[in-house]
Image 1 (cartoon, rainbow, N blue to C red):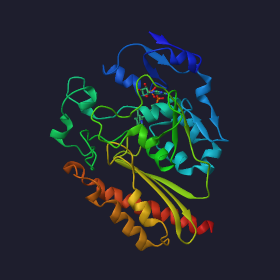
Image 2: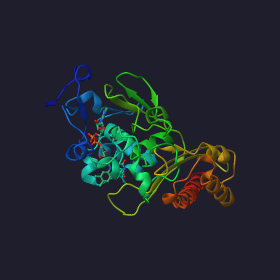
Image 3: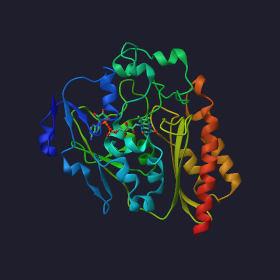
Image 4: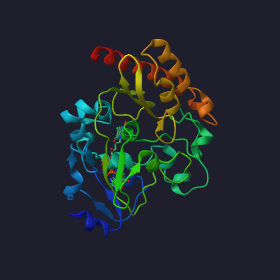
Length: 315
Ligand SMILES: Cc1cc2nc3c(=O)[nH]c(=O)nc-3n(C[C@H](O)[C@H](O)[C@H](O)COP(=O)(O)OP(=O)(O)OC[C@H]3O[C@@H](n4cnc5c(N)ncnc54)[C@H](O)[C@@H]3O)c2cc1C
């Protein structure tokens, strides 16, 4: 059974699994991990709204539409840049903002119907026994697969707020939690719907997105990062969010604190990169993926250099 509600009120009365673009959901249905009725959001025009005056992005706005929008490219450069790296043009044409944030994890043990996994209601993690290069390197909780959402990383860096049917404002940290949940990839209850994502108004800044991947095209990254810098000769605000290293997107708040007030100098960037990879932030490291700390350092240093270069040129 597939329902096609036309309004959010009609949607609120239905029960079933939500289908937005379907690009992630159909994968899970083919693997036998999703069953039962579907609620398809395609006819709910209110969820397709891209309101630039707030700015607010409807859950059904496609990645293609958002990433290619000139105003987004001008004011939220790292968001547009990140979207251009997600999957393929064909997927970006149908995949939506809501679906990207709420997609389930990519762990092979989760995706294999007959293997144990906390996120399928099991009581242990099969992935921990094997050790993969794709695992997280910061061991925050029971699950060691990276969070799959690139937009989760970007919206975390932009301090975005998520509106749902039942909540007017959830931060990205509240949506994903601190990585210690054994049972879910996000905290949106099955009975709730993600309606829109609100961004803070644009500010004068430079920003950049970078990912390291074992394939240049159509693969989830080993790690990915967004850096936003404000200031002139000195950094007045820094925002840094990383994906691929933990079971949730992570904000490097201690590195942001270090960078604030510092001059745009190479020595500062090297120190920031060392701090980012300092393992004291995690209780444990996952042995098979410790190498990601090197990627983390290099990624941050490269992004800081690029952003600083653009800041100096714009002064
Ligand atoms: C080869 C390949 C490479 C990829 N690389 C990346 C990558 O690098 N980074 C990345 O982020 N993604 C990547 N993806 C995943 C892709 O971005 C997702 O498949 C897509 O964003 C999901 O969007 P969708 O609209 O199709 O979601 P759907 O498949 O429709 O839904 C996904 C999940 O979200 C739920 N959902 C959707 N909308 C709502 C809503 N409004 N309210 C409540 N629940 C909702 C659904 O119930 C479902 O559980 C890749 C995919 C492929 C095939």
